[in-house]
Amino acid sequence: MKIKKINPLGAEISNIDLKENLSTESYKLIKQAFLENLVLIFKDQNLSPNDLLSVTKIWGQPQIHPVFKGLDEYPEIIKIENHGQEFHANAHWHSDVTFEEEPPDATILYAIEMPDKGGNTLFASQYLAYESLEQSLKEKFSSSVAINSNKSVILLAGADLSLVKSVKHPIFRTHPETDKKALYVTQAFVEKIEGLSNKESEDLLSLLYEHCSKKEFIYEHKWHNGDLVIWDNRCVQHFAVHDHGNQTRTLHRITVNGSKPY
Image (tube, rainbow, N blue to C red):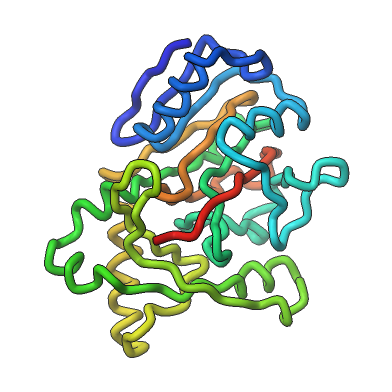
């Protein structure tokens, strides 16, 4: 197994078949690489849904999405397909499922059929985003929380609006394993920063949304069939670029259990 670091975040891990049983040493190296690099790329994998569920357990217990339906025989796995730009739901920077009390720790995407060009995914380190914020801003809003809602997902899925709910999470999150701080506001789900007027909240959120995705924080992944990519949802935001028209783009997506942000 070889680990090749990517700047400013990410690492490509080669010479490994995730269908094989991992040695204790390999398992430890992968877990450490994940915490250090935030995004891991495993090339040239050949994984059935059963294999994908097994691989996921390296990082935690596979979850069933609270809104979107998974595969009939594998409800933890969501099939992501290209239905054209009009129906593209992920063309914005976000962390996954922050509208839950315990958002997932990690998200896995496995590429099944990708377009020849386009369809890349961008990943942004929210450690770097937090570290580069003005100190006065970090101090002023050190205890601030944002109200996160699932309303946009409910509307997108055409689900019952009675299922709409909200939760509160800190705008600066402490990673439970590294103890590092990360910016933790996601445009898809945050409605307001508690305790601020609507205008103050909008102004601060606009600043943070623009800041979280600066070029110097980003790794852009060009997909190939058989790629498995996992990222740390506690300190990474991602953006799916839709520039491939109606070309086929099919992936399997799965998340793992998480914990209450603090």
